[in-house]
Length: 79
Image (cartoon, rainbow, N blue to C red; front, side, top):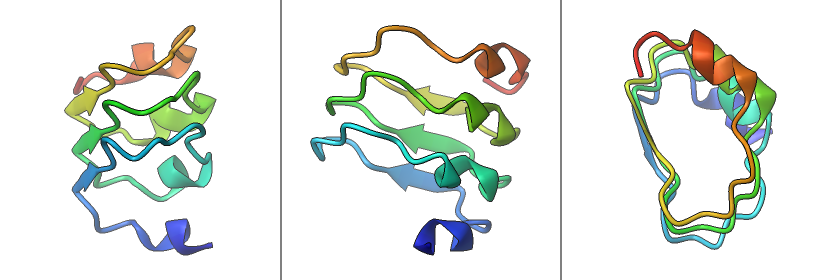
């Protein structure tokens, strides 16, 4: 998938896109990702492997339908 080629990306703005599901593959190769904007979508849950984005400093999730957050977020020291 094209998501596997995101290893150099540091900023991703996917806000206001009516996103329902965040693919697991987004975080498996996103080690340089620092800012992820997913605000104003329809996301109900985040993938458990979001913790793989170790350099994430800003996670913008406002105005979604999140029911709970993955445990792996507690391991992200940069947030």
